[in-house]
Length: 70
Image (tube, rainbow, N blue to C red; front, top):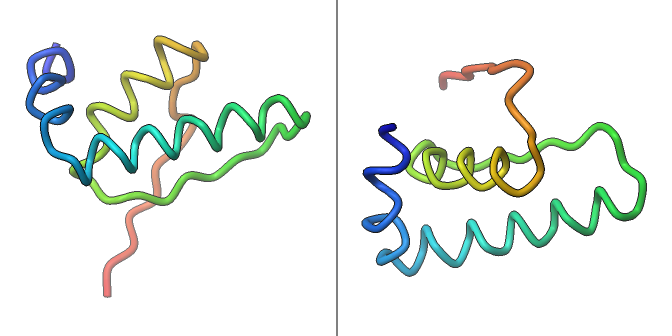
């Protein structure tokens, strides 16, 4: 539900919207090329929209999360 609420806001931010569109396009290409293990590295601000798109367009969901601190 949070992702639905934030979708309009995320779409209005050029950096988030454009980078997410590029990531989804690259994901489509990788899937079409037959890749089965794909990693997307992106900042946390992108995740509500990007996660929603992956679920809606590809029926994908995270299989694991790894936090790395510096």
